[in-house]
Image (cartoon, rainbow, N blue to C red; front, top):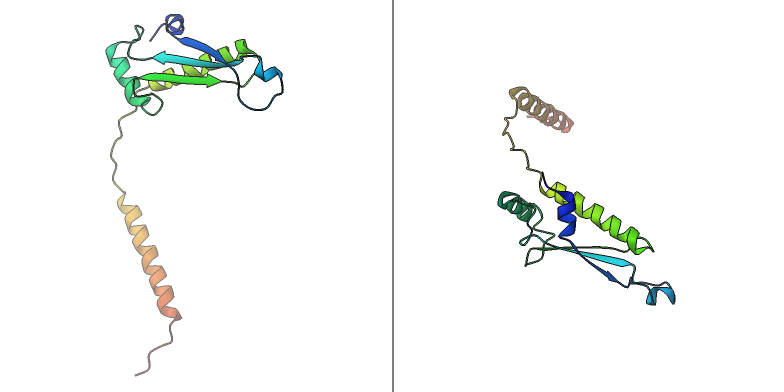
Length: 135
C-alpha cells in the first residue's frame, strides 16, 4: 500500500511547551509534540491515493492541504512523538479506505401490509372508545 518508514521521514515535528497548570516545570520543558504533514508535497502516495485522502480527510486538512496533529498526553516528549505517529498512521489508513457502494433496496410487501394492518387496528381501537351515535 505505502511505505511507512518513507512516510514517517516526510513528517515534520516540532516540540512546544504544553499548556495548562503544572507549576514551574511546565514552563521549562517542551514536551508537547506537533506533527505537520504536507499531503500535496508527499512522494509516498500516488495521485489517486492523494485524491482519496483529500476527499476523506477534508475536515482535518488546512486550506493548504496540511495535516496538523498534536499530542501532550505524556510528560515525555519521546512518548508523545510515538503517540502522535501512531495516530497519524491510523488516520492515513482510515483515509485510504474506499467506501462500499450502497445497494438500493425495496421495502418488502409483507412489511407494508403489516404496517397498514397495525394502522387499521389502531384506528378501530380509537373508534371503539367513542360513545355510540344514537339516531
